[in-house]
Image 1 (cartoon, rainbow, N blue to C red):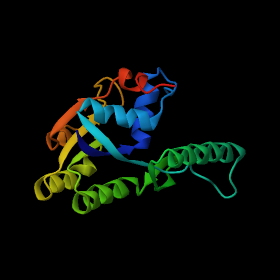
Image 2 (cartoon, rainbow, N blue to C red; image 1 turned 60 degrees about the vertical axis):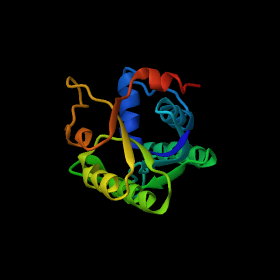
Image 3 (cartoon, rainbow, N blue to C red; image 1 turned 90 degrees about the vertical axis):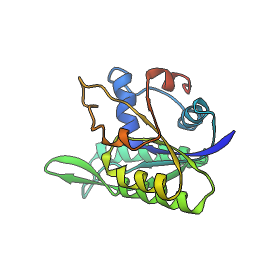
Length: 185
C-alpha cells in the first residue's frame, strides 16, 4: 500500500461537521478520520497536518474568549499527542467578523515543501479554497504528486464552492456523514 500525507483545513472540516450534524459538531477522532480517508483510497496515512487558528482574544480577553481559548488549547494538545502536526495561523477581527489569517499560506507551504522533500507522492487534502489551486497545479506538474481532494458541496447552503479546485485535482471525493461516523467515539 502506498503512503500518503493528509492535509486538513481545520476550520473547513469543523464547518462541514457542524452542518452534517444538524447544527452540532459531530464527535469523531481526527486521526482515525484521516486514516480512514486514506484507507478508502488504498493508501496508508504516513502523516497528518492540521491547520487552524486560535480563537480571537481582545485586550483584555472576555470570559467567553478565555473559555474558547482554553478549549482550543486542550484540543490542540490532544492533536499533538496523537502525532498530528498542528500548524496555526492567527485570528483577526475585520469589520466585526472574525477572519483566519495565514492558515492557507501555511497549508500551501507544506504542500510544496512535502512534494519536494519527501518521496511520498500521494496527498489527501480536505479543503475547498481555490487559493490552493496554484500549489496543487505546481506539485502535480513539477513533482508528480497525485492529489485527492475531499470536499463538501451543497448548492443550497454555505458550501457552494468554485469548481476551480475540483478541476485541478486527480480525484475528488465528496465528504459525507458516514465518513465522520466511521471515525466516531
